[in-house]
Amino acid sequence: MGRRRPFLIVAGILSIMCWIAMSYTREMGEAMGDHGDGIDGQKTDRTWTSVFTVVFYLWMNITVNVVQTPAMLLVADFAGDRQTTGAALGQAWSTLGSILVAGYVEFFGAAHKTLHEFMWMLSGTMFVCVTVAVVFAKETPLDISKVDAVSTWQRIGHAFASVYHGIRTLPGVLAVYGVCFFFVEYGFTAYNGNKGQFFGLEVYEGSAENADSCNPCTVEQNAYNEGVSIAGGRADLLFNVVGYVYSWTLPYLVHQLGVKWVLTLSTISQMLLMLVAWTNNVTFNVLIVAVTSITQSVWFALIVPVIIHVFGEDEEIGMYVGALNSANCFGQLLNFAVGSGLVETSLGYKLPVFLGGVMSAIGFITALLFFKMKMYSM
Image 1 (cartoon, helix red, strand yellow):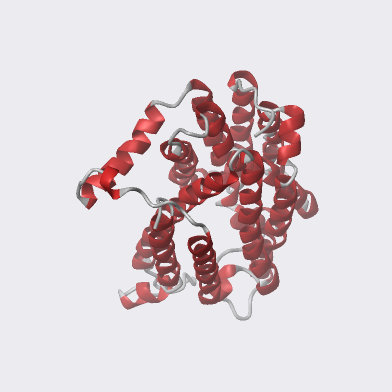
Image 2: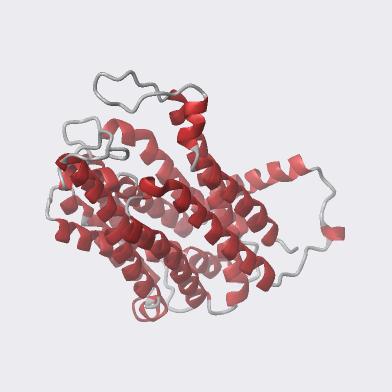
């Protein structure tokens, strides 16, 4: 089976199971006694629906991240001495997946309107991608005689310990990369996790109350749904198209400018979220959101190349990829932890978007001052 494919298969199957179950969150909540739609004067209790939503989101974040890391390593395995090109190719294909989601929302409306179909689309895409990778990516299986005979639980413990060891032993330049990556991913998640509400409530000045089930809908409910559709459809579509095109320029840009300046300068676009937070111009906001994909494309695509640049091609880099990916996860986790409190202020959903731009600016300054790497090709 090799070293990467078992993770892809198991995590891929678990992701599909999660998405299928997630599409029935509301029905499961009602089966457990949830009732009401939040209409004025109607008694509403959606406790179980909320519990299932949190559980499925946690499940999804774990399994999708488990798929992501071995997929990146698999690309690195076959890229040889063309790691930047391989990373750009991998990032471009990742962006095509995001384009598929954005295209669905653009053509069929907000995902919550057709949740079952949307989740089946995600599941089908995961199945096809994992199947192609498993069938066509030929790996050299580990020599069992050279592997310590330990239990499954011990192997799981070793896996978590290796990530901790990777974080603890990161060289200084990679530690700086991880810190910058944390700020950048917090910044993006602050926007991405609130984009529907931001466009629906702040930009379009709509009302979210029963907007997912109204028929007919009020002007405010229609405005909210339009904002959600723009955020998840047109804005995301442009975001991913720009990111896809930019991914293909990375080998040339790294050769011309060096990885330090490519990373640092590419972070500027996400800093513009500070402007988006205070602007109600839909066209302007969509265009700024589109160019933030430049930041995301670069920081994700260059993880493996910079690690190989530091350690060389013969070093086992899996735990270091996991260590840097944990910076991404921590950025997302912190955002979700504080995000619910931020939106309760008088600024509403403007505040997390603005804070996303601020955190991106901190990442930019950190990279500018402390990220020292002379890498011009790979």
